[in-house]
Length: 71
Image (cartoon, rainbow, N blue to C red; front, side, top):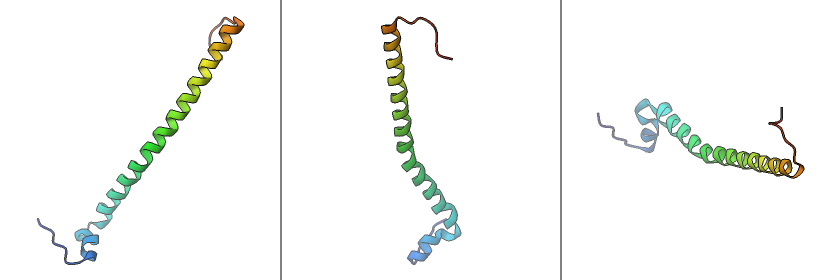
């Protein structure tokens, strides 16, 4: 099967499959843009949580508090 486009409108119509073709491109582009943003957000949250944990452990060592994890 070969597809020949005689105009820009024919190209955009994609032989009647435009919704599927351009929809797929749109979803892929959206995911490619969201992935780094979500990863960056998760990384910041993880670093903040680790910093809080380190600070809590330092405080625990200074005060000599013994015990397990907070409830």
